[in-house]
Length: 367
Image 1 (cartoon, rainbow, N blue to C red):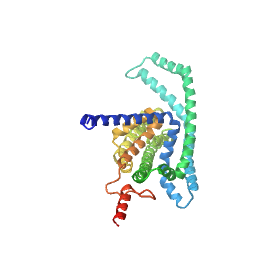
Image 2: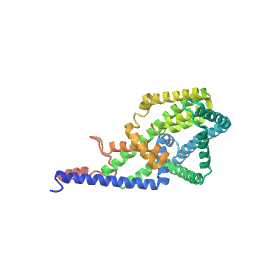
Image 3: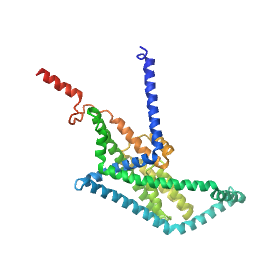
Image 4: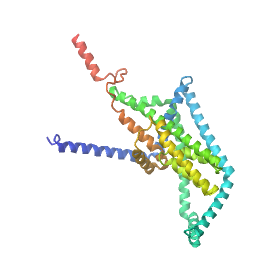
């Protein structure tokens, strides 16, 4: 009776909730401790899901190994070509940007000393002195050493992600079937539903986000070229990459483009760039986003914001990029956890549901 009254029922449910929270906390802690492995695995999984249509098309005419090699090399060539264009663009316009930045800094300093709210020149000199002291301090040197360590981890993670991506592209369905091999009946059917749903949502999210990011980058990049803002191509690529961080990514990179225009071209051009960024973001949010992402991401903006915050706290920028698609997949899996009403379970060899076996046994008995 102690467990069947209302207080006992609430106690059991509270214990279940606390146990679930504890397990989730332990899982997150383990992922954070193993992020050098887990982040490449998640990145490879998302990219493999996005490339699934290409792999299906190539596997119809080519072997799995050849299709995987073509897809992977094609992605590396495209990514490497973009990086090369960025490097050449920065190299060609670096001197011009440095000169413009020097002039812009001088104008800004003059505005501070002679503007409507003048600042004492001694305060400005003290600020520059403090910056110089920090750059030459041991704290800055230790930070630089830490940056080298982070760079080493990034290179290791990138190589690991490429290797994992190769196997996901080549043997993705077989790998998932291996994990499902101990399951039978309804659990096997659920596992297959989860696999299909995860690939569909992840792939749709990445392809949809890439489409939106390309439109944003093209519109802002054309505006920068017309206004003759330096580093238009690298800034457009940053806008493309920033769009993979919902809500704040495209806006932050657009503001960066406006700052470059402010330094290099002056206030008028910077305000025009800012207006272009705002207009593009409004068109994306009101027209492009609902159309492209309708079937890929159905999350409330508050959920997206919470996921972004949690991902950023746990894994920095990479966590911010991965948090939203992971949240979308988790919600999609929750919706398909139970089969639709009237759906027939998938029956494979030797895995007929118990109900079906019982009915066949009763039929034989009656005969």
